[in-house]
Image 1 (cartoon, rainbow, N blue to C red):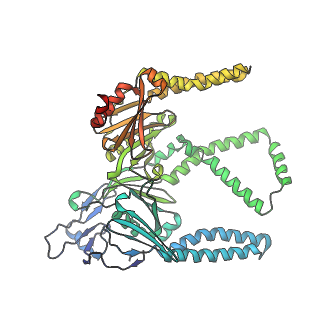
Image 2: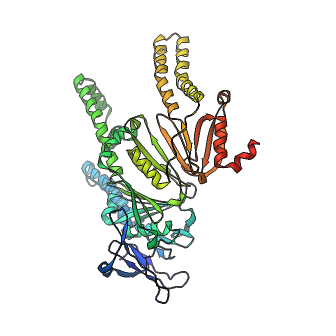
Image 3: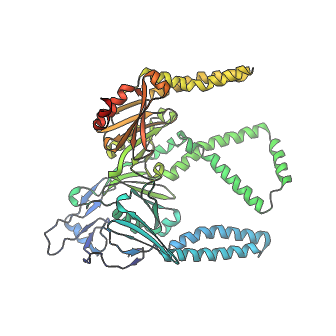
Length: 542
């Protein structure tokens, strides 16, 4: 039984629905019409994500014939799952019950308690009404949602503009067998959110909305695993600043919550705050040092825990012409990207990750909204694994990289050392020798940074894909297909012209809008652009 509520409607063309053969693993194939030519129906099953194998012999006896389950638009009006309002009401209930319990403890059957009950009833009614007025349907050319109460709001997304389908399930959704579906229509096309549908309906929508051509048994396995995270990779979490600073964020959030709660209950007064400050100032030095050490020890541990929660069982696989990335422990998230819209990849790391041979991988998808999260293909992982996945998704990564001229090294050194040197000159002019010396030390320490920034510069092209790399504290290497490049921009500042350098920016309708080869020689920049798109560049070189 489909867990989503359907309002029956006949097919748009009036044709009867074709039944479907479903295997034990959920793989489906349409049954050929009785009066049509014989069609080989090869049910496929998944073998742990590595590929598919056809059912044969006795295994075919377990097939069940069902109708209306093909991965094609049917135009039927559908509603969200009936338990949708339960999920929304449960979140509000937790907050309102907390407020009501606080009211009982502080003032007994006070006004706050009654307001909590009224708020709970209003929230339930609101979620039921929202479920009742919301419908959606998939047409041949568009995906449409409607809200109709007093007025009517219709949101329609052309199927050709759909970049990806993001399926996520919080712990509450997973307990009820539900999922949230985000249909992404690009950075400027908006999205439609279905909160929530059954897991089966979510998978059906993903197949239908991302289908561009019929998948036949001869086209190969329906699911092919490309990469999967290993448990030991969780130890790479402390190398990333975002995960390492997690204890500070948690501590700040906890202290803010406690302060607000105490202030609402009247537990925080000026005298108590001053008394607490005096007690903290009077703590022995050993206790303060111990607290600091415990906090520093908790930082890498907390980073591993948070990394695990977000990236548990991170799996990337290819299915039905899409690249699917699944991850998460408490909240499970599955993002499907249409493969034909993946125009490149981005490999990024920081100095600590480079020392450990670790890199992060993201996909550059045309018009994808929230690309930093939805385009993620791998968290911190060994570089060889990320490069292999990039090759599987896009093709071989060009290499080795061509180094940039020595003049680029001089520019990197000047740009790294000039700010502290200027600051040292200012402090020397005002007579502060201590700060002058400190700035000079910073200038000397910036020399290795400038040299490393030069070492990371590079570019390469293999006739099909272009790759450029730059950065040190955050190094990025972009790999884009030639067909993804929609324009060029050559930038030469006053200092670059004096050094005979130029920055070649390739405009790409994906990711951050393009990638730049920084401080190439002017002749090499023009020659590279001309070799990729000669018809664009050659007229300007004559």
